Image (cartoon, rainbow, N blue to C red; front, side, top):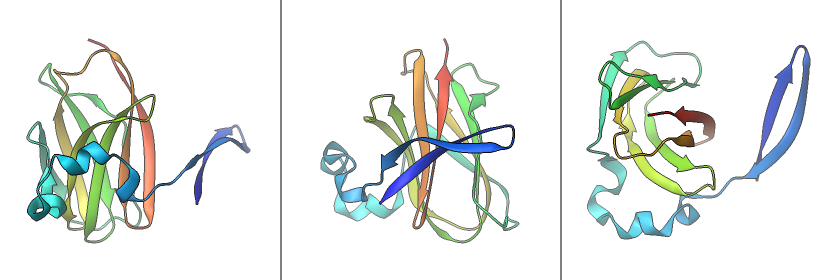
Length: 145
């Protein structure tokens, strides 16, 4: 299965390229070696704070742009999920290497804000993705220090 990356200019949409979609079992072998089997379904990065901002169920998924938080070392990211499910948000470099798993746990429907500590990252372009069963969305993040 492949995900097509679409770009819209004015009223025209065209496909620039497509990315293969992999199951979690082939995303990153190092990730699976660093966790214990008991906490795989409920892991959360200690550098990330997850705050539920609304319990109202949205009608679709939403992954917002990352922007600097009030603290100099934290970035804010908003996302919404329409029903209770397993949510995985990852940070990758431009080569597709997973740098960090920001969250991987069951969440109820609603809107969430993540405060993510970026003090250990260097300036550059990164991608981050929201993954649930049946839905994947990726966006780019430019980090300038």
